[in-house]
Image (cartoon, rainbow, N blue to C red; front, side):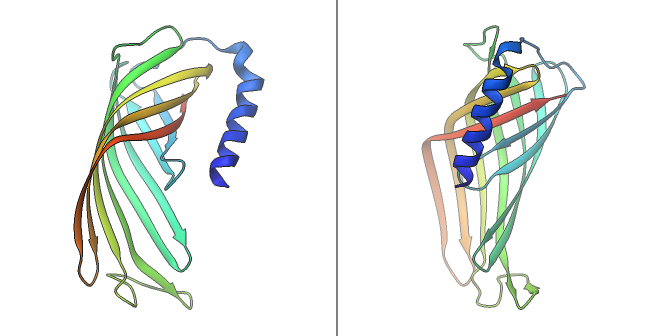
Length: 178
């Protein structure tokens, strides 16, 4: 349902703004807001351009599934100018490190930390490397896609530790520059 709303908003923005699209390249000192990982755990990101081709960013995401709640935070960097860049399409390399913690469980309005009431806490650390491209739909607004690989270390409270290597991961992004 959440993914359907994102696509509806994206389609509406495309219809209203595609006639005014202009190629504008962010410069040093510009700020970016973008959302990625839309279909699973949306990550809200704030980026800062150190130059016109290098952006560092911080990420924050929240989960709320049944009685479990969690938070994810991370850092990353994009280097623009990968092969395939054209007037309205910018390509980039992306690297990120994210930590996701679902180790507090609400019970009667009281949050328990460090594994929760039943020891059901889950902690994961993810390292990603991606190749991405974003198409400008309007000045300062673009939609993008990334493909790449992820290494994830998952720890479950009460026992259980897994390392997962995923090749061919895919992600959508919505980007706004100002």
